[in-house]
Length: 210
Figure (cartoon, helix red, strand yellow):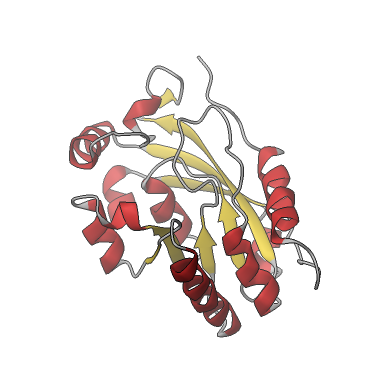
């Protein structure tokens, strides 16, 4: 419904990789709260986000209604429990989607993928499906450095004013790439799996330019 209201259009690339697995751990870059809506409209998923998002007025409530799992990355005890929950979800046949940069960005580069949540795929013996979002158009204009802040949500941007501005723009077009699934080795370090997933995403990522 939200995507229809905003005139959202998703160009799916690599659909064969999406359909090659019954379920898995989807790991991609993060640019906006709209990422979740575009991904969820294509792949029904349980999304993992940070406790800080839960505490964001408005957005936190929406994420709770959507059934997101909130992780406390600053606590090793909490994180271990949450990794176990992700493993259980994967073993039950659910798709789990993560943004391993651990924050949203301004679209100029992809930050290093954090390793902890990749443990769940290895423990559940499920594949990691790298995915990449490239926002192409906002309104009738291509996404550039000039207008990116109307769609990308990062840093200390307030949520509600940003959402109102985005609604006024409308007509959002995004390329959503699904790349070759990665099977974590039995003894493979999750940091290596994270690096492999990041390399795949970077191979199709288009940094925002003027």
